[in-house]
View 1 (cartoon, each protein chain N blue to C red):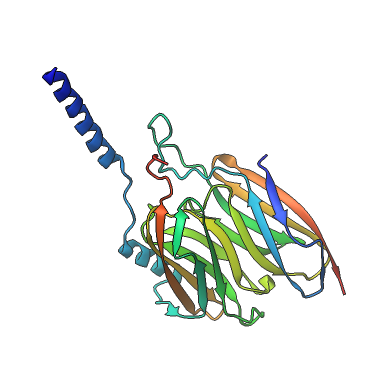
View 2 (cartoon, helix red, strand yellow):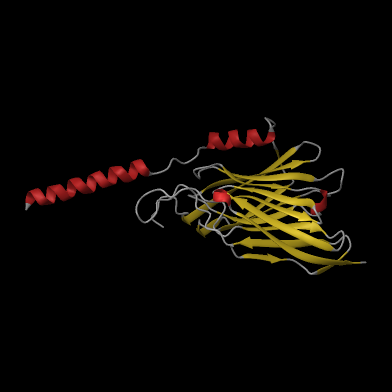
Length: 107
Length: 151
């Protein structure tokens, strides 16, 4: 399991636009870089990132080798109701990880 | 003594040639235009509404902070559906594609990207009405992202 960091407010007013920042530990090996032995390393990147808010997709990203190691993505969403946000990363070599974060919406 | 020196020189030359061959091909301006055209489905994106924020001079091409903002009310009828970032001279022209919608609330995304050399970046936004908007920025990179293994 890679280490994932998710930074978002725990509470928000209904209708408020909140910023969410997500970072995950991953080498994002481009497939263009030779290793210490001079042989080009196989590509190993995260391809997909998606966010579901109580089951409904609110944000997604398609990543390419030009994304830095330990991909960091910041985006916004509208706080509609209390519940959970599910963050999932999928990549090469069967990489898959899902993290969840709870939000309480008032008003 | 002389022959050894010659041999060393020959080896060095051979290594130089091997290095030049192993260098991965950079993408070209035409490839970026083609990639953008594939994203827009042939339409030419109009300049404006998109703000691409990136430093004009970056020290480290391995992690270049970049953010894209698009002017849009982000309502159910009028919102940004996708934002894509392209580059000119990395081995691949695609950088990232974001999918947004009315639930985004605000069309503002940030990430960190790799840049193989000084080049032009282009952000293209697709709106819910099918129009495309674009903005570009030229970036000078002093230390390139390690695609050749020297970094």
